[in-house]
Length: 558
Image 1 (tube, rainbow, N blue to C red):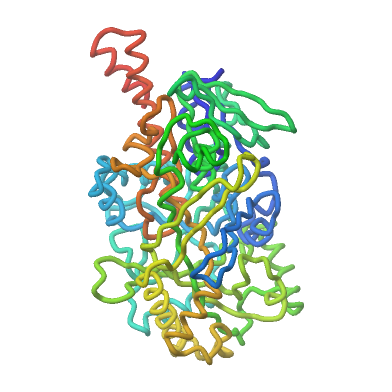
Image 2: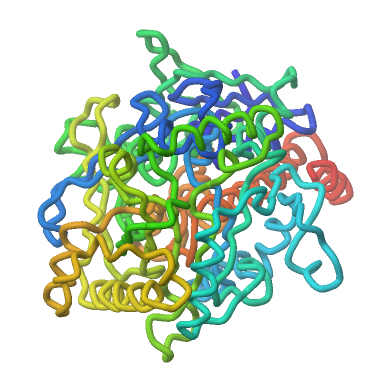
């Protein structure tokens, strides 16, 4: 028996495990389906390719055939280890635009405006570049999550930033500060040259606490209910089924795929979807699995005749060995790179109120999430990747079967609206314009993809349908709100049920304008406060009798 059972040891779960166990008053159990985060490639920044290729550390989800993307089943890498996707991502520290959170508040989600969430972003940070009078309102120090500047910069990054400015885009020195719009260099979630995943930042400091139990290789299969109250979780561990009970709350932090899937398996969701799999209905909630959103990415690649790019070509072997020694003995050099060191936030057209496209510039050839190594062995190349930040398309997640160990059916429904396609077509044109600038002339050996023959809008559309991929930002499948399709309220409690919350990227009502790991961490930081506040009031109802005692309990919970 625990006070809190958290399902999912990913970006949100690691934060909750730390914050809820910090006072020592509550017994907390964290369940993670994957293994411990001991693989050395997790912690080495340039180890992204081996971890994303892993069959153990990556869920390797596949979508259903996407009718607007040449009927392709598209790979969705998601982290399957302590730290979740923060253990396999590119470590870019991006919050999104202030507009995104103000929009959440406008949708009826009180307490989630930019001014409401900014203190949590600051609290979770240790902003290594430094906090002064100029940026103090945006950044914090002393938090668990280390936000650093690059230790090594591939020469092509400076070329990209210069070329983008030649194309008319302004520079910005902090995408998370006063001005998101522009081009520049990403801050990264690293510490001392190593990945600073949420497991390293939040869970590792808490692992020694007697009131925190972490169980890995524990695949949750069902939320246990007594009436309308969640009372525990059933999970598979080493071939057997185990029940763990929660006296206060069950918290789902299994991500935009895992959390709605577990709700459906537990009988919570659309009636027809649950009953068609023979699962007993616990609570009808039509929004579970709906509202799926993701950033679809498209790329422009040039051959790099300077050979500054990262490659697996035999000629790069000596360079790689030298850089491995630099990393092992000094935590420096190219092995500290997150690949996507430079990028930008730009507008698809000047009429947009805020930037609606994001660029990631990488010094290698794009190869289907690292699954195809042959192009990397043949070529030196650099790539400019473009995504539409606020897609109109909405997908859904359903059960493929009642087997809790089977992956769900994921329909991203990409490019379902004309607007989504228009922005990506424009994105290709703008990326090509940047790559043609004078700064790239000494480096470019010619355009590789799209082929130079792809010029008309119709040809570009076909290229996008055949080559676009996820950039790893699924959200929205247990959205926060008050409407009929909302799954959780503004305190992230599941509508109509007791003792059950969802705390992860699935609660986002709309996709934020940027990478999603930092916002997910913020959501968990805020949720921890909400949970502890509610716990203090609950304690008062049972054990105290005066308003003063309630206030004292609330203060103690912080």
